[in-house]
Length: 113
Image (cartoon, rainbow, N blue to C red; front, side, top):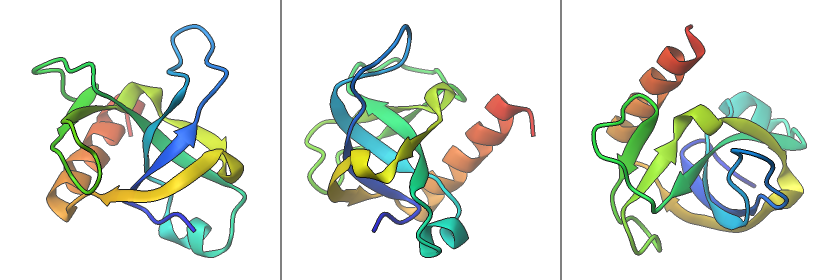
């Protein structure tokens, strides 16, 4: 079962337009209460190894963690809900709390909350 702050490998195929596709790491950002209730979908933020410096709040850099062998950027503007059956393997990493705080702030900015 996914947990908030965990990175899982997810099958995001088929991608459409600007959506990232293929199997890639995703950060689970869904509320713990929905995850604990067994909700059938999860809110995620995809990661990419195509790095762009100084792009916050649209991108947040994640260092090598767990089995992530390369630094990655979180694609904050690609927040989406996926069916939990798209989650293949995980968790492959867990983000530390200070990084999750930055993610939460970036989501608030991008969503104008």
